[in-house]
Image (spheres, rainbow, N blue to C red):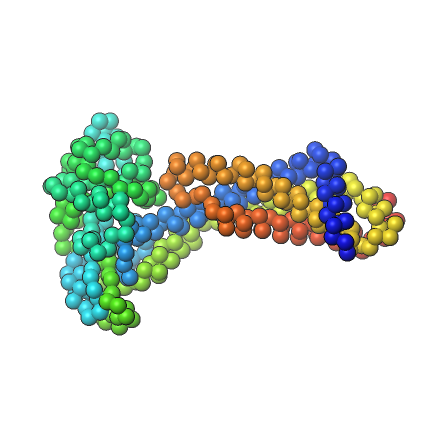
Length: 378
């Protein structure tokens, strides 16, 4: 089969066809692609953002409560466990993590917002974020707090030296870092371990997580020894912690389930629009396909022309959707603090899926005509 002839006839069929029908089909398919990409981008953003706190640190494993499910609702356990973990052979260092949801009150407007407050001890060997490292170095005085500069605007301005109310206690902003973790609360802040009980109300002898770093080549042996810790805690490798957190948000939390459902609906809408566009296009040009068959072109040639036409329509729909989505996602990332901007490999996957869907829809429309006598098409 001469593919150049197939491509030429396919393009002429699209370019010279009913432009209103063709445009409507492309627009409908673009809407489906738009819905799929939008939900995929947010689903990916939620998954990435759900583990953003862990990405602030370098660690090999964590010790958490045996009732742990996800970051925002971490049960606490005795701080004595950190001493036990640190004394375990093969463990190089540990850091204690405390975190609690507290009330933030803007002293100027008296508006109330939610704030996730954290404190980390022994963070020197664990910090991966340079902005957090710089911010934590400013926690020099009693009641100092460092704030996420990507917190919600509801918290008001966050200049250094501003007096704020956290958990009913006065605090002073001493520095800023960048995180953008707003799926849990309106803002995020760190205080010193000494001040954490004051702002959170949590006793000093309780904590929520222990970050663990192992000696070189000692991980498996140390994990075996840590498995003997009391039953109120359990240990998770970093990869398992991240995977479990993301899976919880995508498969259990309503937000992730709705996003996944939206992707499915968008895919159905897009394929249906592509199918309808080609069905209308083929029905309007049945005589031309019949003429090709009548003058001797084989059935697989006309089938190829139709499938290529569908691929062209799908490609045009993908380009239209991308032209709208690229600037929109960029704006939404700045507004929501979610990592929704897609890379080239993501867009390559979108276009590949679009072309496959177009080809399959084209086959579904044209396959019955493949077996029909040309005379019946006139």
